[in-house]
Image (cartoon, rainbow, N blue to C red):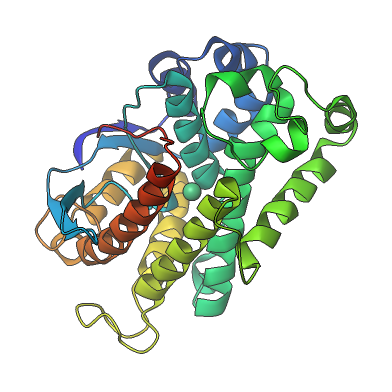
Length: 325
Ligand SMILES: [Zn+2]
């Protein structure tokens, strides 16, 4: 983590996101007019948060043609879990905004044990919690945001995404399914769940047709999720650099401590202590990357998956949006 921006106060946090992060007019308006962006951002800001630029450490892997690819170790790290949002730049400003809303949604909707005595210990419940949290964030940033603002779709990805089959059944972005939009207005909670389960059904399907790129991409993310959980719960000690059982309990306990410290010490001091802990030797191994060993193990798996997907897109002469740090 470099250039850490700590924002203890809720009001400052909302302002920072509105003024410094969000670039798309429609999304800023939704904040100003107390729409869904406002709801999400204010929910996120209930806790002290921080923003950061990823550290420089890289790893490299080789693709099947022997070409070397490199990635910042910290790039795919799941820091919203501990309240940190990674700053990134994408060529497409809307895609960048959706990335931020996705990460913000992760943090805003992540529950922790009711109290310090009941912090999450069970690896199966932990796995389910993280899976549900990913569903929630992805359904928001990849599906329901387009139900709320169908006009955003032509400004985001050029390739097909999963929500298109529901919102634009003819494949034309100017022809939205009016019945679905009406239902979204009448019963948004239910439509959100329907979208979530439609997505979940693809993830758990035994096979996905490789020509269905939007579904294929979701499936790829699912296997990444499995690798992530294996690293953090390390059930049989497959990752020798990590303790058997993994270190997820440390994060769970620290987040409850942060919440409690907000009442006892105040939000500013609580946040300082939290960030100090994230960068402590036990957690960061002398680097500036919290949970460095988990970050490195996951980055290797992430990069392999990313290459597979890019290859699949390439074979069809398509491209997706990438971020530059
Ligand atoms: Zn996510």
